Amino acid sequence: MSDEAGRPLRVYVVAGEESGDQLSAPMMAAIAAQAGRPVEFFGVGGERMEAQGLKSLFPIEDIAVMGLTAVLARLPSIVRRVYQTVDDVVAAAPDVLIIVDSPDFTHNVAKRVRKRAPSIPIVDYVSPSVWAWRPGRARRMAAYVDRLLAILPFEPGVHEKLGGPPTSYVGHSLIERVDDFRPAAGERRAPEEGAPVLLMLPGSRRSEVTRLLQDFRGAVEILRQAHPDLEVVLPAVPRLKPMIEEQLADWPHPPQVVTGEAAKLAAFRRAHAALAASGTVSLELAISGVPMVVAYKLDWFFRRLKDIHRIVPVARVSSMVLPNIIIGENVVPEFLDDDANPRSLADAVGPLLVDGPARRRQVDAFAALDTVMRLEGNESQAGAAARIVLEEVRRRTA
Image: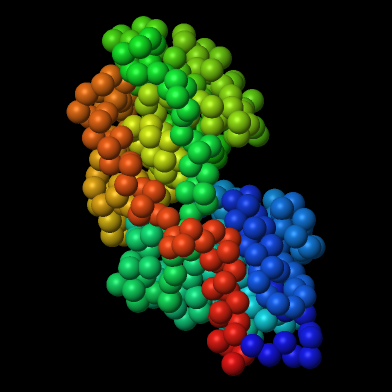
């Protein structure tokens, strides 16, 4: 790759929420370390990205909304930010545009940049869940994404099958943190040695908590009939703690609410089982060796579409639970919408609180995750992502 007489490499990064900021910052540091010349960063991001030298075009909070209902409520503002970002990308004329997760925002930016400045290579970091919802997105992405960086090992095969863009697995940050999640000797008692510990994880977004918390309450009260000394711990996102505690105020046996990463990890290392919302937390639990039951309730708008018109595409995989998909076996019970009711959840969690076949099946299956998810040569996720971004720049400028 020519350095164009020492000109700095110009990298434009667009992240749409906190998780994208977390992923982008170490990748940016790795790009700076691997580029072999100075790097200038532009784009949209949070505090971590700004610490790597990016001055965000606007606060990331302006676009960090999830779920169709929330997006619709702020649609005019989000649309303005899309066009503002597109204008800024075109004016900056970067050597590469990297969009990070948050497809409702970042893909709208990428599609418009491709039309206005087709010479700018576009790399997408984190695949939309085409394996579960709207699989047709994969083929459409191929028109405006030159390279896709996947954080789940099965995604390259999915995109190849669906006609998506060239996709590379770059690893998952959780595999680099296994020691944080796994108990030291004596930290997790055997299930029969005292009161069982149950994690309650109703989600990291307000809408998820609102939809699931009361059903989780009902399930726990049923479980207390067999386990009156049951200890329930609820790791909460700090910004949601007041709302959660308000909803717990009338519970006869409210769970212990903890916040902060250290408290969450300590709870994971002690827990015997979990009742969790669908999402990345299921992978965290599996890496920690905590058997679980997973529940999910769709946004009301999507439920109405599904119930009335049946136009929500069916999943292309046999599970919505990440450990199940990665392992290739549905070891984690999962409940969607009306099936996620107190009785069904309690009946599935109960056998996980004691030593037995249901518990052992999950724990044994989770042991395969390290091998399946680790990169060759133990390359870091950020290092692999940076390497492939720079490969794409070289390919386009060769």
